Image (cartoon, helix red, strand yellow):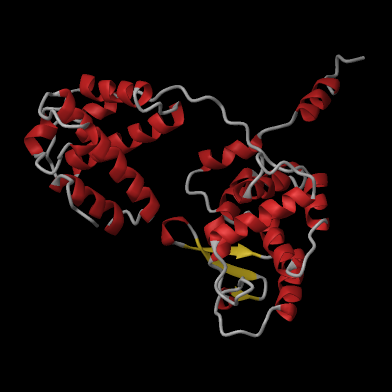
Length: 311
C-alpha cells in the first residue's frame, strides 16, 4: 500500500483492509481518498494549515489528533462534502461508512480510541433508486439484432450478461480453463472465486463462438480483432453499439444494467427466490439483492384488479 503523505495509522488501516479483510483494491482506494479528504478538512478546520486545501500535508497526524476528533467535527466534514464538494446523498453515505469502519478499527483493533464517536453518526436519507433493466421483449430484441463480423463473439458476450448476471470485470477476465461443461468459475468482488452455472443458451453461444474464434495462443475467452485480451472498454463499446442497433437507449442501459436485467428476469419471469438470485449474483449481503424485487406499474395494476372486492 502506497503510504506517501498519509498518516501511519491510515496506512496500517488500509493494510488491514487488504490483508485481513481481503477487500478489493478499488474499495481500498475509495476508502483512502475518503480519509485523505477527511483529515485535510480537519486540519484546515482546526486552523492547523493555511495552505490550499489540496496541498495540506496530513502525514503528521498522530493518535492524539484522532483522539481529539469530536462528533461535531465529523458532521462539519459531511456539511463540507455536501456544500463545497457537491457530494450527493449516496456519496456522503459511502464516506460515513468509511469513517465508521476506520473508527471501529481504531477502537477495537489498535486500541487508539476508548470511545467510538462514529457510532452516533447518522447517514443521510437515501432516495430509493429505480433499477433500470430491459424487459423480456427488449432483451430478445437486443439478442436478435446483433450483427457484424464479430457477431458470434458479441452474441456470446451479451448472452452471458443477460443469462448469468456477470459483472463487467468478471466477464472480461474469463479464461478458457475457467469453463468446464456447464460450470464457469469467475473472479468476483474481493478477488474471490465464484461458481456460475451455464444454461443451454450460454453453452450453445460459447460453442458457436469458439468454432469461429481464431485459434490463437491466448488464454482468455474473449479476444479482440488483434488477438489480444479484450478490454473492459471494448466490451462496453460492444454493448453500447448493439443497444443502439436494437433501438434501445444507450444513456439508460449499460453493461451493468444487463446484470440488473438478468436478476430482474429471473425474479419476475422465472419466479426464482431472492436467496438464489443473491447466490447467482455473488452478493455478500441480501439487502443488495432486494433492489431486484421491484415491481412495475402493470404488476401493481394487476394486483389491484385482483382484489376480491373488485366486482
